[in-house]
Image (cartoon, rainbow, N blue to C red):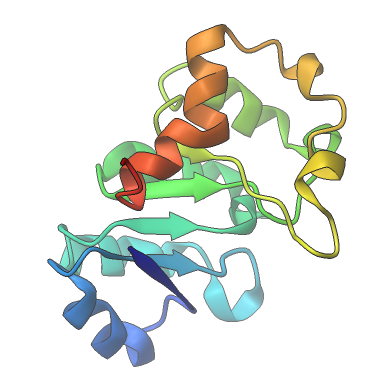
Length: 147
C-alpha cells in the first residue's frame, strides 16, 4: 500500500481517480489555505471508494473536518504535525466518542518524532480499544497494512 500526499483541489483529481481500486490512499495536506478542508467534500463525494486521510487535523477547520469524517465513510483525520497537548478539544472529544475509528496518529518525523508527539498521551484518557485504534489499528485498516 502506498499513499500520495496532494492538495485537495480539482487540479489533483486526476491523481485521485487512478488510485481508486488500486490500494492507494490519498493523504491530503489539509489545514493550509490552498487546501481548505471544504474541498475534501467534493473529492469524497466524487470518489466514494477512495480512502482519504486529511493531515494536520485540518486546522483551523477542525469542526468542518470532523463533519466530513462523520459524513463520509472513506474520510479520516490524522494528527501529523501536532503534539498531543496541542490537539483541539473538539478532536479529542470526537476521538473519544463516535470518531474513534476515524482518527489516526501521525507525527511530523523527523522534525517531531513520534515519541515527542506522544508526550502527555495519558492526558487523552483513552480506553484500551480506542488507544489501539488511534495509535495503529486505524492506519492498518486505512492503508491495508494488515499482515
